[in-house]
Amino acid sequence: MRKVGPILFILVFFGLCKSQETLPYYQQYLLEGDFLFNPALYGKTDDVVVNLNYQKQFAGFDQSPNVQSIGLHANVFDRVGAGLSFFRDQNGPISSNGISAGASYFIPIDDDGERKSQFSFGTNVSFYNMNIDLAMLNPQDPGDPTLSSDANSLFLVYTNLGMAVTYRNLFAGVSVNDIAITNDIPIVNGIEPEPTKIILNAGYDFYLGEQMYVTPSVLMNFNTNSSKMIDMNVMATFLGDENSFSAGASFRSASNKFGNQSLGLSPIIKATVNNFFFGATYNFGMSDIQQYAGSSFMLSVGYNIENFINTRGFRY
Image (cartoon, rainbow, N blue to C red; front, side, top):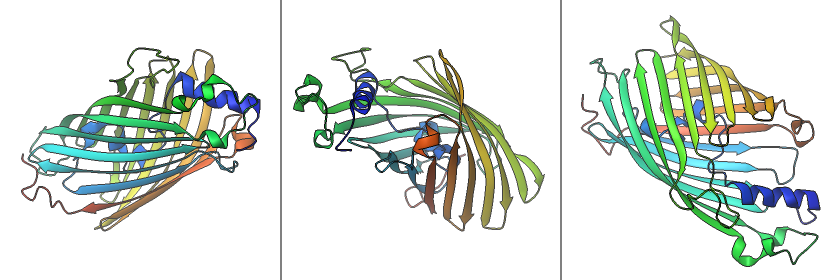
């Protein structure tokens, strides 16, 4: 990265000055990380859930983007859930860090006693910080005012809102993410907050027997810059007494005012062994940049801990 050409230099700072990416959205929501984007899912089960994700993008580059996240959530009191998450996004000379904390509230829809049918809503606050290591750049014009030492860091605060519902085998949710609290004016000193995102998802578990079901689902990600991303997913799950195994695929496409494009096809596998769960996905990119930049992959691990915070349990 010490010999960054003028074109790459312009691209880097164009990205800095136009918008700031919070936690990048990949397939975390299919690998038990849905609470990272919808705070209404904090405490959706009776366990304390710990989830870690690692995403590597554009594997053909030496210093390609990579994202790490760790989060936990639990039912903390009666029908109240809470969650906390942290992420780090490294992209060459640009590093971003964020931390989110929030709460949710659940309302049972029926008395099944297993939390299969419930409605919830929640909110959180995200604190985001971005830094640029100017020493990693070798610009054509070192005197460019964009490179001044007081312009290489940025701190923003966002809030997120969400609702979710499950009813028997049906699930759906909506969340509004990256609502700017600070720097909420469209452009201040050349800095534009991350566009607010509206995320909709829905799916259904079709049981083919007591120990197997297939789940088609869809997720739509809209933002205030008039662009949208759509995921079409299908997963098959095989159940055991305490274990499970799932396999499927996700197809992602995107569109904006300039046109439509297929972004990638991602096979996905995940499994649960007792209280430990893990998963992986590999993205076969379909965009032009993937031909020389390489594809991406994600690894996820987690653990369901018996709830030591709320030993009383969920209140119906």
